[in-house]
Length: 431
Image 1 (cartoon, helix red, strand yellow):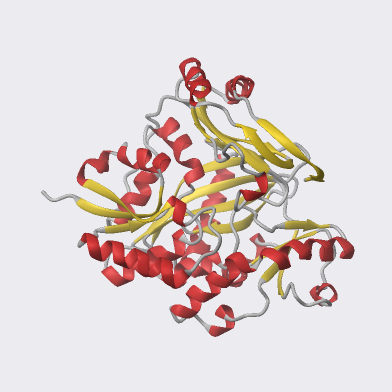
Image 2 (cartoon, rainbow, N blue to C red; image 1 turned 135 degrees about the horizontal axis):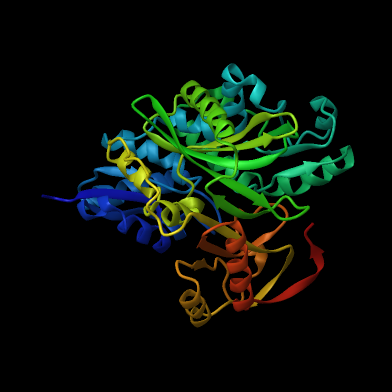
């Protein structure tokens, strides 16, 4: 029997290993529609070039059965373009874009879950008098209509702070908004969205216990299958770790699943995985939706594998093949798992990163440990793309354990065994 030809946008070694470990992998061959290096740490996104490159590779190969991506822009938006051209399963482009475009997404959400979203306004960051037009009382958040990993997102505390925060937005917003708009124009999306001047969104504050619901939509049925807690650095906006399963009460998780179902159906996202970020405000006993991403979160794949015995790449792959995903059972080696992000809050040049030897020694003492180092010797932290506005990631550390206390204990041991040397900048301090 000939194998299924599966193309991945943003194929990288870490996720390829996860894909090959799936039960379904024996019937599949995996290929890069685009390599990871072609969509991350690039100078610019040329959407016509990227689309044509995908088409060329698929045509040259001669056969395609499935297309998928676990990465945000441009991965998610290219999946429906390729799926439609080659007649393979996948979501529609407008379903994906209504998730990806923050303002468009809020407009759709407002129709069905108005009590579970913040107040929001679109605005033009190049308008020098825009603050008064917003008619919003600080503190509030501002961010581009398209970004990833909190890139160019700022919590604004005053009018002066608002205009100060606009400086980096004005300087860097074109990096992602221009190619995003270009793709929308290339594939006939509504002009009022594809060509809107208001390329940013302001939102009132929502707070509480932050988490991410992972789910999928298949043939019109919306399914939630796991909730991951997002823990932040103390007194900071940056995430310190993702922890699974969630500690939230089951009743709260069911409410999130219901809100998700209504939003996903309104948006029209189908035959796609998704992850939805939420806040649960315990004081008000309210659930608020932060954003919808039309993909699995690859940051969660290893922790799902540790708890379920299989990563949720399984969900993505089965959907891409046009099948209903199988149920994830608790067959993993651990009852609790976390993805820790080791960060620095000051910019500088990386002089030394941990060696493979250091990491291998730690793996002997901590079964199941995985470590990804996104920085290299000689690199400046500012060369890292898609970071949040307040910190830089030095390492991604994946750990399984019996409970939360053991997770933290193992993480501290890992940190003691990893050596980073950084020549910090004198003047730049991120807080």
